[in-house]
Amino acid sequence: MRQPLRYQIMLPMLGLMLTALIGVSVLNAYLAAGWAKRQIEQQLGEITHTLEQSNFPLTDSVLRQMRGLSGAEFVLVDDSGNVLASSTDRSGLDGLPPDALGQSDIVLRQRITLGGTAYFHTAERFARRSANALGVLHILYPEEGYRQAWTGAVYPPLAIGLAAVVLVVLSAIAVAARVSRPMTQLQTQVERIAQGDFDPMRLPERQDEIRDLAQAINQMAAMLDQYEYEVRQTERLRTLAQLGGGIAHQMRNAATGCRMAIDILAAEQSLPEDCESLNVARRQLELMERYLQRFLTVGKPSKEANRCPADLGALVEEVLPLVRPAARHAGVDLQWDHPATPVTVLGDTEGLEQLIINLLLNGIEAASQDQTNPGQGRVVCVRLQIKGTDRVELVVQDSGPGPCEDVKEKLFDPFVTAKADGVGLGLSVAQLVVEQHGGQITWDHEPGATCFRVELPHLSRENYCVELAGR
Image (cartoon, rainbow, N blue to C red; front, side):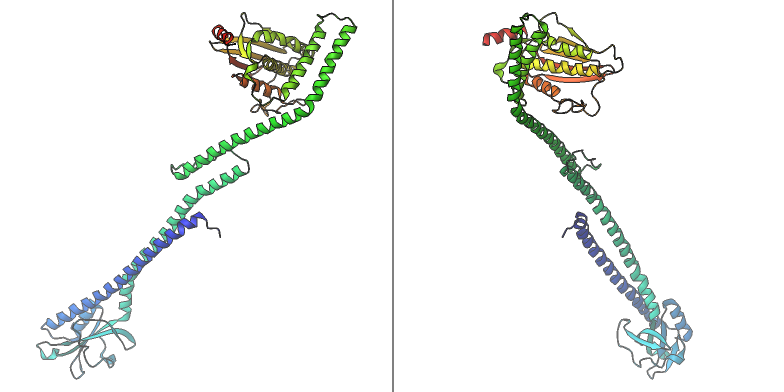
């Protein structure tokens, strides 16, 4: 059986406090009732003592005055049972006990009924010097007056106890709710995490253990979100490798056959060796073969043995003729700002070529989507510069509208693209190559310009000499 936390907190505390309050209230009521009875008996005893010590005769008038002071009826009788004086009507006194009770103290215990009125009765023998005072003094205290005195003494402690019980119950409910409400929120957050929603929850305002637990749950959610992202990335790359393994062999054979057919055709037609279109076609087919070979290595670190000093500007020069036909077809002006001095990096030339081609083709496709100036203004600019003493920056800027809102946050993720015929691997492979070379790739957009920046470690002349000496 499920026991909510609020009940586990509230019921034991409430039971303990209620037991204590009820016990204290009942004890106070009992003591107050005894105190009220003792006060009445003490008052009657003092009046009786005063009457016994006085010298004035006890008459009906005197006893009525005593009744006004104490609320009790007084009846004085002689040893023969004749009424000597009375504070009440003598006609209803036939039921009085004939003898005194023989007690030294006034104790209201015996109940009698006289003239239809119920009384507590006690009696005391008088021993006064005057003859008319010898006899028995009967004291009759009305039950109604005694009940009123008892009620006035007992009810206030009980009322106070009841009010305290109500306050304790309300306080217990409030405390239990205050403790259990954040726990319910934590339970809801954990259930959301179990369903795949890793958004952080709002932290409680109080600085206590529950806030610490909420912070720990938010940290766990962030870690799970990161783990899920990494798992998805791994699964995508694994799927990519599995699919590539099935098609790379056939496509590579087809590319090889196509390149051989071009060579045979050039030989048969006696085409010149410096034919630009023929050389571009051969180079494209060679790149296709190498890309298919590297396709299976996506997600695997490149080998350090394949790296060597390379002039990044020369690589850009070699790649530009391969992408110019695509730029002319799209109506994009491809501008290259050649550096005055060589910009050397240590890297895999094939991977760096693939990086540059992917960025250039991405920029050409983005610039071709610019509908503001269809006939002019479609530009892709390539710049290369040295930043500081140890970094190289390659900038590819296009005049396109920039990535759409749906893919901005995941622009470098595999298979993420907004193009109808796109695969979503160009920028992902570019980022992978940059990371394998110890660099970083970033992008920013402003109206009319989207800029991708690649920073790589610069291989200075001193490091280049050290590298050559090591080799």
